[in-house]
Length: 50
Image (cartoon, rainbow, N blue to C red; front, side, top):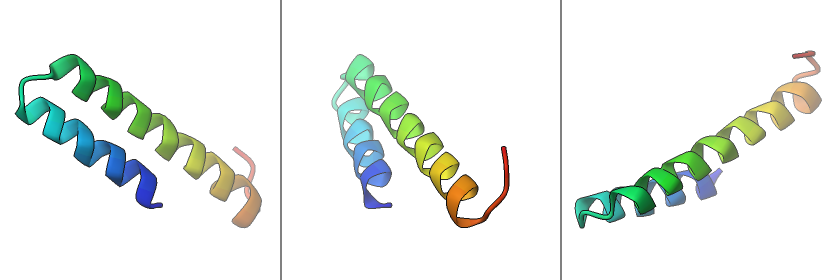
């Protein structure tokens, strides 16, 4: 669960130094990681169907 927060933090650093496109790209990567993580855990570990 460390990976999405790491990519979001690196994206924040990029935005801080006026690299908006790189920051938005890392934000998108973080969001995709979190969506995948939720789908995996919600379907297999909690035994619910989405």
